[in-house]
Length: 211
Ligand code: O7E
Image 1 (cartoon, rainbow, N blue to C red):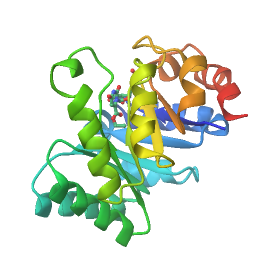
Image 2: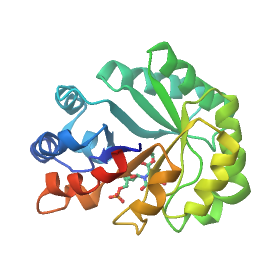
Image 3: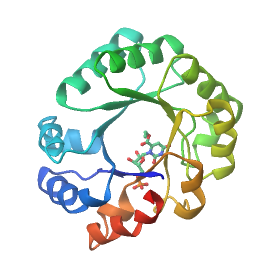
Image 4: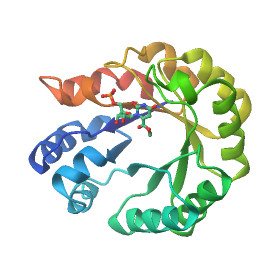
């Protein structure tokens, strides 16, 4: 079974509440990041949390350890149950997020390789493999790996074993849900659900990955 995670990258409280409410029956978690928090304020987190789904904070935390700790504390106090950190900042910064997340009883995922074409310039190949290995050594709960490159997901799986892989890039970015779902633990989908005429139907169409 692969979890379906909605990337709720809409810009207003009204859109966010409407889409989250309609799609919730087909989701395992909701990912909230800068587009929505900057648009609607952190109070939106508390409101969406009312649906009862786990909320993942996608702030791709990428700073010195102390700042990472402060950001992570803020996220968990706001109602998130997981946080995403960048891995390229190094093990001390990643450890700050992992330890703080675990102190709050939550999870931390580390971006190893990104899904867009520009990721191939710095955030892929050997660097991504090193980040994945470091994420395991730091006690992270899993990594983020690209649904746009299934062969890379397979390679990163060899490194991280049974830790979780959450994978964005299906739909709007060209990744194939059927191909990627068996390789990962959670599929992150944004535009092809929230921009659909009927977001609930679009989310339901991805339900096959959850069986
Ligand atoms: O392309 P979409 O609309 O389906 O949205 C994908 C979401 O995943 C969006 O929020 C984007 O910021 C995020 N994402 C990627 O697309 N690629 C990555 O490599 C990493 C992420 C991401 O979410 O990282 C943390 C999970």
